[in-house]
Length: 160
Image: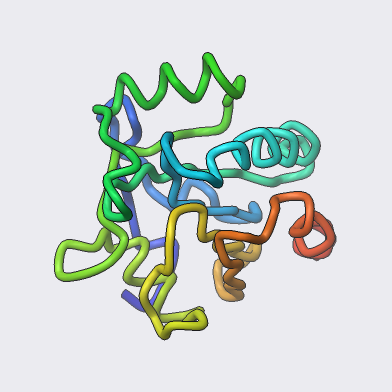
């Protein structure tokens, strides 16, 4: 794939989500997990979403169980956990792999465009990718980068 907007994914409810539906928006994509030390970042992600959704920010959570089995639930359990514990209202996708042969195409694309400290692979849960309004510019943030630390880049992406 050479274009972010050609990609699609399954939502947490099983419906198809075309990334082309986010054309003109800044999109923050995060691989998430419910039993990770970084799980409290859901609060910060939700704050960003609530603060900037009306200006064109979309946050997409992609649950992943590839790192120390820290996302063991099914899609319904994950959605319930996120809403109950963190008040998550941003879209959650169906659980995916982010590394290896079975990596979801969205993550294959993002990793190829924005390699990280260990190369193209996703290092751990809560790795974040910010996609610009035109779908061309992608910036990666490591798992330890708190959502609040990304706010300045989000504001910049939304001003374009």
